[in-house]
Image 1 (cartoon, helix red, strand yellow):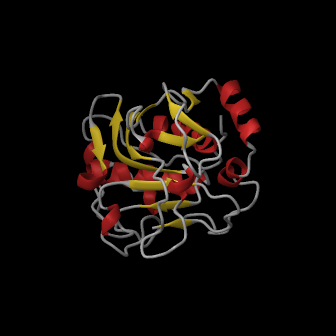
Image 2 (cartoon, rainbow, N blue to C red):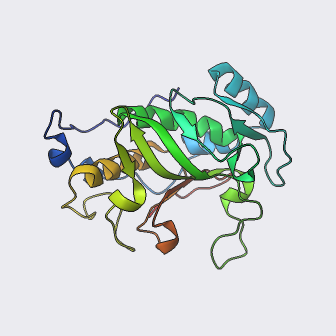
Length: 235
């Protein structure tokens, strides 16, 4: 499991917690430079054999995919909890439920943060999208390699949900995290923002895109790792 160096800021407890959630999302983000020793870069550069060995050692709920996945180096599918969190993915007949082994390791580390925010289940829209490209560009998206995941809903231990489209309350072009982020967020909006900014500070992913990025991301968080990436993007 990942030992996260970033402290969790104080969070309100009790019945009034939804209205008094501390705005930890306004804490500073680290540098946009991503070193080779960052979690995202370590997993992205791992060999397939080493990745499968680490997955086996961690006893993650994934198994080798029986379906061909062009562009995915080491395709696997989710078969059970990862790091104690249930990732609800598209079914066995859908290519969108395939992911690269390396992303599975990043999700295991992500589970540490999710559980810290009381999240026990995550709804996944897709991971692998064959031949996916960045909007308006020829450059492949990390979805085309099975190295990206789109998260839409997060269920907490008490059964309540954080829904990206409903609860994020952002605006295109606004900063997601840091002192310049929107200050008046309360309740689920603050909780969801605290969570994604905690992920941003962790170094687990190279690119984090939210509804503040563009209209296409209005209903999900996009998280990915990319071999050779040296810059972190949070929008």
